[in-house]
Length: 132
Image (cartoon, rainbow, N blue to C red):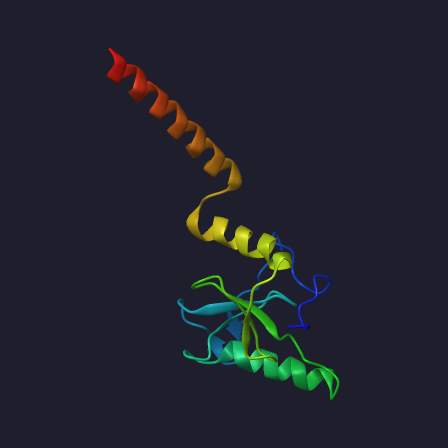
């Protein structure tokens, strides 16, 4: 997919906007964050507000534009391009998806390192106890 451009994407620490639109709020559940502007809308299988956001921005871009076609799912953290109708997997997306994973699951690289160090310490203690 050639539509993903880091210049236009929200940063991993960017501010996702609320889930309210002209039709009201999107229900909690399967919501998507637009990586262009940070707006959060529900999936095509709920009320299709994320799809409508892309269609509206594509229309505003005119004949040459693709609108805000890249979004990330808050349900499974997959990244979708509406223009290509395809999921995206790219190293440039790692920071964004990793940050969202940390927010969703409450883990960070530092937490993971601490858990690994604790596991190594506990493993060493168990070995010493077994020798006694």
